[in-house]
Length: 501
Ligand code: NAD
Image (cartoon, rainbow, N blue to C red):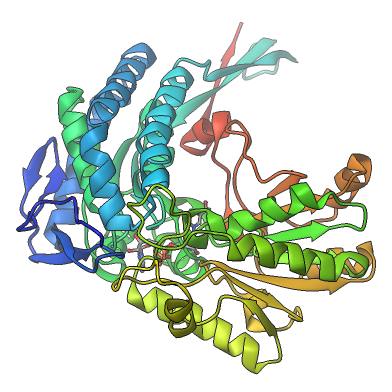
């Protein structure tokens, strides 16, 4: 049986605004553990006035923070990293409970990764922000003297940044925005996902511990339609940095256009894992299997479409079926569990309807399937929670909804191709372009194939990441790039300074 590590009765949290704690003006709502279905805590519903207060605090703090030297900004970020790590034991159970992540993912993938982002961008704050340009000779005119015109391009902070994030990795997603934004001298109002906002609110305590200046980081929680939309509508917010679905990203781009906000949009994906005829399946199968094994498939970069050369099709289907069937599904608190629940009952139902729809359209259900079949087959599952078994669908065609739309759960489809032309055509046939993968013994061939993929990232014989790469999407997977030094560029405006000598 699962034991809920969060004390009862669940606490009601407050908003973090201007370095202090504020009651949400529109009440509060329960945050539910996706595994136990118990209430973990209550999060405030920020009212329009709360959002306004948070934005005003960030605007006021911007004046001094943007003029604070890079070394001092770096020192604050390093102190935030230290304070976050010092509270690791408080964060892990809270984040585990509100996200439903396995204890392995909750302990290794949240606090350490977020702390590393603060440290990375503390170093970034110290990187040169000035690019000198070659002097330019100017002839004298009756109105102005001639001489040499010199210039530099300087990176300046954008201003107040609204960071609106998705539920899958709450503080990692937020730290990936907050750290570079603060490093560049911006101030932030964060709006975490409504399903799991408590860890992000707790980051306020970390900023208090670190002695960060009030107002540089504020957190407002609540629904996207009210709290998120108020942040996007505010004329005092200069930029929105968003991670979430393509549908909501489109809406934010349209709404934020009225005030000409800068936009960084990290949106959905429908990754293709292309298995060429010469691929080593000992590499390809576990890499594609990460689409199930990593956070129950709630990963935007997951290779959820296995595109397989027809000569290897049955072999790959069998290999993936064995891989999926071996994954331990169940209580996320058990160290042996690999696949835990998905975030809500609504999301589970949505995933199940994609599976049922694919089967109705003629796909073959190889492994997994509906919740009912799953529970009967898996006595290790607790009696509560929003579980979907790792599911493999074969005989899928590129036109099926399950092959075109983002499912965001533990579902992989396998589609055969005849030759590279067809593989490229299928890979590029969705609206998304976030992360594809190529598996081949011939790396030169894989590089050449990557050039034809309309996607922001390509993994060649690996599903591992590199933290310094620019990260973002082609097509409707997003606008802009973050990651590494690209993150600093994303949170800055270029200003030219010109003088004559
Ligand atoms: P979502 O789009 O439903 O919600 C994301 C955030 O937007 C939430 O905080 C939500 O409250 C807010 N929101 C909703 N409507 C809004 C509105 N009208 N105005 C302002 N804010 C609004 O996404 P989700 O279900 O939380 O996360 C899953 C999605 O996130 C998937 O599509 C996944 O691919 C994507 N994602 C992308 C990346 C990436 O880096 N590209 C990373 C993680 C997740």
